[in-house]
Picture 1 (cartoon, one colour):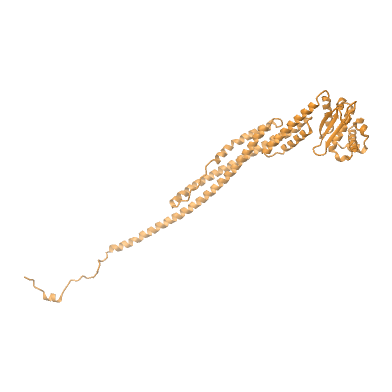
Picture 2 (cartoon, helix red, strand yellow):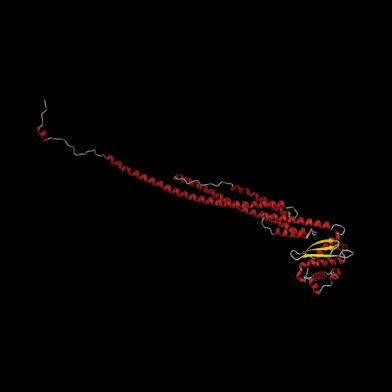
Length: 401
């Protein structure tokens, strides 16, 4: 059995339609909420990136500033250390020369007090050398390669800052260690110069104690003493100066011993008196004496002979040769008069402008006039051999002393 058909409805046709047509499902409101959530994320990401960028820039700038200060501190420390090293080297050289000076001292001329002062100054100086060398032995920090990440840069900057403080402290210590070394060097140098001056000051008395020394040895002693007295630096030349001075002193002794050996014998005492007498007539003139049996063709049968050689250059010096008969007849007036004549030649080195030295006759007349001016009237004064001198020579001779 079939169901009845609604003709009206069928004829018309019919169908239930939805209120909207769509080929795809309608988007739900949830998808719109998701797009709105992306924006804050992107913003946050951008803020984070900017923050990282700022941190990176800040870290780079901070590192560069710290590195600049570190490099400056390292350069200052290097410079200060170099100055300290130079001062140490200078002091080491001075101390080395001080040791040589002390080792060279033979004890003949150097004053014991001056020697002791130099020894003490050298010892004190060495006490400040070791601490200064310890400062120089410290290892200096070196900056590593610049890192890349900001957190590494911040850490490296902090390390550089700490190292810079250490460098500044070390530079200050190095700088403060330099003045004491300079002072010590000055003290040792002054003490060394005082050693040389003391030796130079002793030279005149040493010379006076060895009057029979040869003129050349005495002149060498004087020259070395002059060099020593002007020494202000304690260097190798200062040591050489003391060596030269002491060598000259040794030569003074050696030549005197040789001279005394030559003059040894029964006439030695008289010869020494004659030489002392001659030196008393010509202070300031360096006199050397030789004795022989015959001088200037005289010496036998009671005759006396003399011969003088002198030098116009500095220092005033002469060599007087006398016959043994002068000592044999000493202290007769004629011996004194002849010696005075020879000294008149010798002392002419101090008065060369007072007479005509162009002829032998005028030279002998001058020596005779000088002996007369000194009160020696015996004709052995030169009158017997050369005749009486002009009064003008005698008058001039009074001004030669």
